[in-house]
Length: 283
Image 1 (spheres, helix red, strand yellow):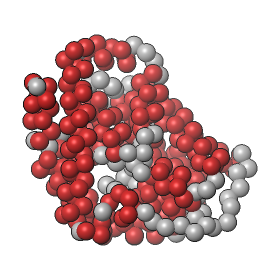
Image 2: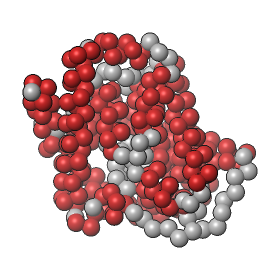
Image 3: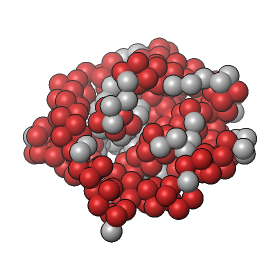
Image 4: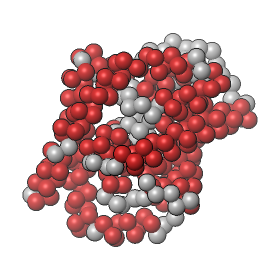
């Protein structure tokens, strides 16, 4: 009961901040979403650069829109990779509601943009070297409104739905983390990760592949609790693209290609996490 009450108090205090943040995000989604999609559609060779920058905007359906555009061969693999890596899903609202310093948030987002752009061009090169053919355009539909954002009901309703969903996720995860931390201890958990090179990045990247808001919540909360470091945080957040992977699998009927993309995203995210740890980058 103590774990339950403490976790509930911690989670309830985040609701006002989450709602305000999601309302602002929905406002951006309604007023900038189509313009962002048009920008990467017209970018051509500069697609990964444009996608990496625009993808950092807190828009709930941007990864879904990018996956839809890729399935229809409107954008290439480089732009898709850049958007996926740049997107942060629930990290930003959780950081804001947890009073993480603005400088830290900006640093993390900036690193994600740089990595996203580099990885986007790397993905394009990999596909060219493997002689992967781009097939003809297919029939695609944007699914953000139907499956994720509830945009048709208005900004406030959508923000409320997001807030409720993430509140439940945060409460459950906080409850579990509080129990584990109190039972095992933060120092013990941290030492388990820090004493095993590459293991944190391998684990958080697997968590990040889960196409759901909960995965980014888990990774962000683990970082805020001091259980994982900067490298593991970045690995998990890079590969986490919200519902983007679900949309890709649903609309892109090329199963072998989808499998290759997922494996590539996973290996790249692990690689970048290891690089950040090796360079002792601290957020």
